[in-house]
Length: 110
Image: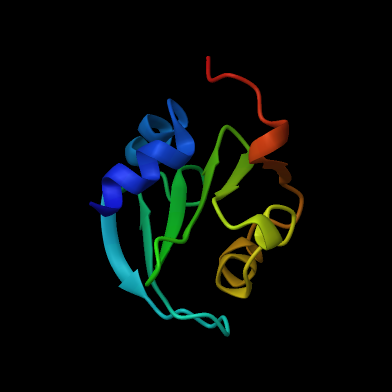
Protein backbone atom coordinates (compact mmCIF):
# COMPACT_ATOMS: atom_id res chain seq x y z
CA UNK A 1 0.00 0.00 0.00
CA UNK A 2 2.77 2.47 0.88
CA UNK A 3 4.59 1.77 -2.37
CA UNK A 4 1.36 2.41 -4.23
CA UNK A 5 1.05 5.81 -2.49
CA UNK A 6 4.63 6.64 -3.49
CA UNK A 7 3.98 5.73 -7.12
CA UNK A 8 0.75 7.75 -7.15
CA UNK A 9 2.67 10.78 -5.81
CA UNK A 10 5.82 10.46 -7.89
CA UNK A 11 4.76 8.86 -11.17
CA UNK A 12 7.82 7.79 -13.20
CA UNK A 13 10.12 9.33 -10.57
CA UNK A 14 9.12 6.45 -8.28
CA UNK A 15 11.46 4.17 -10.25
CA UNK A 16 14.38 6.55 -9.68
CA UNK A 17 13.65 6.56 -5.94
CA UNK A 18 13.40 2.78 -5.94
CA UNK A 19 16.78 2.49 -7.68
CA UNK A 20 18.56 4.70 -5.13
CA UNK A 21 17.03 2.92 -2.12
CA UNK A 22 18.51 -0.53 -2.64
CA UNK A 23 19.24 -1.04 1.09
CA UNK A 24 16.40 0.29 3.27
CA UNK A 25 16.08 0.76 7.01
CA UNK A 26 13.71 2.56 9.34
CA UNK A 27 14.94 5.87 10.78
CA UNK A 28 13.80 8.25 13.51
CA UNK A 29 11.24 10.84 12.50
CA UNK A 30 12.39 14.06 14.22
CA UNK A 31 9.44 16.10 12.95
CA UNK A 32 6.39 17.11 14.98
CA UNK A 33 3.98 15.14 12.77
CA UNK A 34 3.46 11.40 13.21
CA UNK A 35 5.00 9.26 10.50
CA UNK A 36 7.31 6.32 9.82
CA UNK A 37 10.59 7.34 8.22
CA UNK A 38 12.77 5.15 6.00
CA UNK A 39 16.20 5.76 4.52
CA UNK A 40 18.06 3.85 1.88
CA UNK A 41 20.97 3.91 -0.50
CA UNK A 42 23.02 1.90 -2.91
CA UNK A 43 25.93 -0.03 -1.43
CA UNK A 44 29.17 1.56 -2.58
CA UNK A 45 27.35 4.66 -3.84
CA UNK A 46 26.14 6.29 -0.62
CA UNK A 47 26.48 10.09 -0.90
CA UNK A 48 25.71 9.67 -4.63
CA UNK A 49 22.51 7.60 -4.61
CA UNK A 50 20.35 7.81 -1.48
CA UNK A 51 16.78 8.55 -0.54
CA UNK A 52 14.22 8.84 2.23
CA UNK A 53 10.47 8.53 2.60
CA UNK A 54 8.04 9.33 5.41
CA UNK A 55 4.54 7.88 5.55
CA UNK A 56 1.97 9.64 7.74
CA UNK A 57 -0.87 7.82 9.44
CA UNK A 58 -3.55 9.50 7.30
CA UNK A 59 -2.08 8.92 3.84
CA UNK A 60 0.50 11.69 3.89
CA UNK A 61 3.67 10.98 1.95
CA UNK A 62 6.99 12.81 1.85
CA UNK A 63 9.82 11.53 -0.37
CA UNK A 64 13.25 12.81 -1.24
CA UNK A 65 16.23 11.38 -3.07
CA UNK A 66 19.71 12.21 -4.26
CA UNK A 67 20.76 11.28 -7.77
CA UNK A 68 23.16 12.88 -10.24
CA UNK A 69 24.05 15.64 -7.75
CA UNK A 70 20.42 16.78 -7.47
CA UNK A 71 17.92 16.31 -4.67
CA UNK A 72 14.29 15.83 -5.67
CA UNK A 73 11.54 16.41 -3.12
CA UNK A 74 7.90 15.26 -3.32
CA UNK A 75 4.90 15.42 -1.02
CA UNK A 76 1.13 15.17 -1.20
CA UNK A 77 0.70 17.57 1.75
CA UNK A 78 -0.12 21.06 0.45
CA UNK A 79 1.47 22.94 3.40
CA UNK A 80 4.73 21.02 2.88
CA UNK A 81 5.11 21.52 -0.89
CA UNK A 82 7.91 24.08 -0.38
CA UNK A 83 8.93 23.17 3.18
CA UNK A 84 11.29 20.26 3.72
CA UNK A 85 10.72 18.22 6.92
CA UNK A 86 13.43 18.33 9.62
CA UNK A 87 14.05 14.61 9.19
CA UNK A 88 15.02 15.23 5.56
CA UNK A 89 17.00 18.39 6.41
CA UNK A 90 19.09 16.38 8.86
CA UNK A 91 19.80 13.82 6.12
CA UNK A 92 20.54 16.59 3.60
CA UNK A 93 23.10 18.27 5.86
CA UNK A 94 25.79 16.10 4.21
CA UNK A 95 24.92 17.54 0.79
CA UNK A 96 25.16 21.30 1.43
CA UNK A 97 25.96 22.34 -2.15
CA UNK A 98 23.33 20.16 -3.80
CA UNK A 99 20.41 21.79 -5.61
CA UNK A 100 16.90 20.84 -4.41
CA UNK A 101 14.22 20.46 -7.07
CA UNK A 102 10.69 20.59 -5.72
CA UNK A 103 8.13 18.26 -7.31
CA UNK A 104 6.24 21.01 -9.11
CA UNK A 105 9.46 22.29 -10.69
CA UNK A 106 10.94 18.95 -11.69
CA UNK A 107 11.69 17.92 -15.24
CA UNK A 108 10.83 14.57 -16.79
CA UNK A 109 13.38 11.85 -15.98
CA UNK A 110 15.89 11.04 -18.70
